Image (cartoon, rainbow, N blue to C red; front, side, top):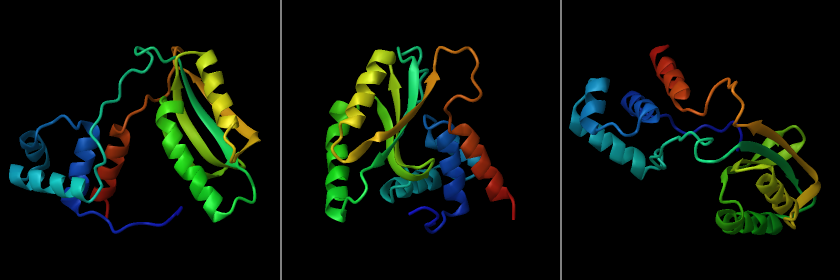
Length: 181
């Protein structure tokens, strides 16, 4: 739930996580040099982080516009009021089952709090028509309140961007926090 914290990682684990967030393609040998530790320690630590679920996947962040996506959407929605625990679980399972085929362009679907909504979807779209079909699918979910759906659309063709999607800034923040007492 919001605000709950898990047991923290050791210093070397956090530093390794930060370096992997900046560039996960680096070899264990290169990471060892950067971190000032041995290559076997990096390999062992990486394996431990993978096994414990701290490292979920290794991926790239492409230029989505060059891949043909022209819109990024944050779509906020609310589940119908009065759903019992069983219905909420059915809704969650249905979302997991439908997501790969109905929402293949969704990169995140999560519950949360704020703006009078309790869930959101982050998704990429080739054009407004594909976004509209996506939004229609969201609104036809039998468990969502179709009257409570809003979106914030980002034009990926825009020449002005404030900060592209990256994990490097978060990685640098983590490293700075590790240095402070």
